[in-house]
Length: 198
Ligand SMILES: [Zn+2]
Image (cartoon, rainbow, N blue to C red; front, side, top):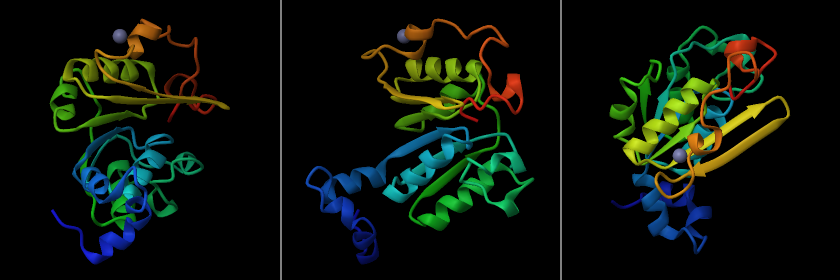
């Protein structure tokens, strides 16, 4: 695989870095990264991955864009209200970088589909807004042996960590089980009060 002149220009600031170089940029171009949740965390993650030249980005989200999403979910613009988030996200990613292939999964992640979807990717990003989904992603990454980049925010606090299955502690090692519903605010449990990653 060789880069075109435009691609060499587009990625020149990466290629100039000795730690990346042309070899690293080709590795990035071959990478397949799955972003679970096209919301407040998934939006910036997906856009930066696209800008960086990640060759394949998967987007999972079953929701449509709502006006209340737009203050933080920068994959979606005002005319996208009412449209599927995966479609809106794919358009913004490809407008930013047409080199990127985007696979859309307009569905909820479940114990039934997680392992199958994850098997096609090198890295999984957790950008979901509820605890059951965070545990499901953790468990599926553990069994599928996929590195997981976990993120969470609540009000003014945030956390990001990378979990390497069977090498580092996983999400479940740290938190054991989801908190009882209502104990910690999240989008699903607390409506507009909570903004846990959504
Ligand atoms: Zn663990």
